[in-house]
Image (cartoon, rainbow, N blue to C red; front, side, top):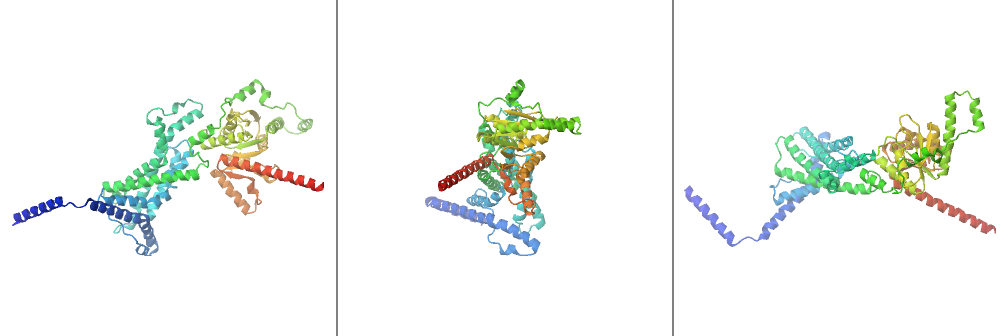
Length: 572
């Protein structure tokens, strides 16, 4: 009877329960089983994520294009079946898959996520709404599309082309969302400083600084700027996007909680790994080129640290010059008789005669100033660089360091990098020379000069700037390239005594260096002409090289002195 069978089953279950209660199984057996499930899940998922998954993805693509059968011969590990959500096996698969994905994450760290975003840190306009965010986002999306398109395998029974397109779309969405999140969070951490720096640079009060809420907290900002944190947070968003995007585009609806958590965990770990790798890379080989100055904030602090508290206020010497014009400007009220007779006997019109006279006066005043303030270092660079740019603050630091080495720093006396060069030396308590060109759209002088010179024309001004004892070429445009080429030409033709020329390792100048290599290859310049300049990434590289040159000069002088003494002793 059915009823009797049911009663027998109930009685049998009760007896088993009572027996189990009287003789409980050792606890370590269940613990051993959980550990065994964890280890098995971790190992199988690790092998598949690290080796088999990318290998199968690549061989499938090769087989499809070349008609080979590599996939069959390179199948070493099976894809692990999904363990029950929350079980020891599921945890093991999550851990193993995460560790197995570490290599791809490290490879992507210099392309996508915090690695790509690090290149934005040289700018004050850090954040998703800035123009600088376009390149890292585009690279991340492109890297995700390429990686998933090649290394993510197509499951059995799926349409190859459709599945590959889906994988590429998921890859682009995943890595794009990861990078966007890291840029956005890091932008929050840097924004309050940037707004304050911009306000102070423009001579305004720090009204633009965020002074309310969490953004006023230095702790909050520090966390937001940390690569490991933003990488992990970006990874969570990327992992959720990956799980949901893959499931939805496969036509399976929303992904399960288990798959979503597993994906988010994997990407969170991977993002944190990317962030850590980026921190290590930036310390070893900083994107900025300056160790310890990865961001605009850090670069500005380094420049600020060189200030002498006793340095005069801005425009101090300008105001002094107005009170006593002979104190800081040198004017020539007469011209040599020969030159005067040549001018008067020429067929030049009045404007040209005045230009020649003024050029003569500008040259005398400028060359006298250079001789009186030797040694002099000239800094070239763009007038368009604002105070809230990395190049400006780097130029300011370079100038201050040169000043502390005993150099007077000379610039074209205008805004941008010229202002940075004058400012660094001026605020460090050193000598600062400005040879300002009188242009209708530019103010004469930048207020950071201890010696104020003026020029009516490019010719005399360039001649004065070129007579320095060393040159630094900062980030610049046509004018800077023109001046750089001119000083190298004078060195090449020996119309100028040997002078160190340091060119900052900016992208335009990298092209210039490659052009010089090609010229040397084609015989258009002599071997050794590329030794007329040195590419540098940091102000400290310049100081290090200058000190090495000085030491070599001292040793050479000592050797020559020794030879003279030896010769004298031999003759006696």
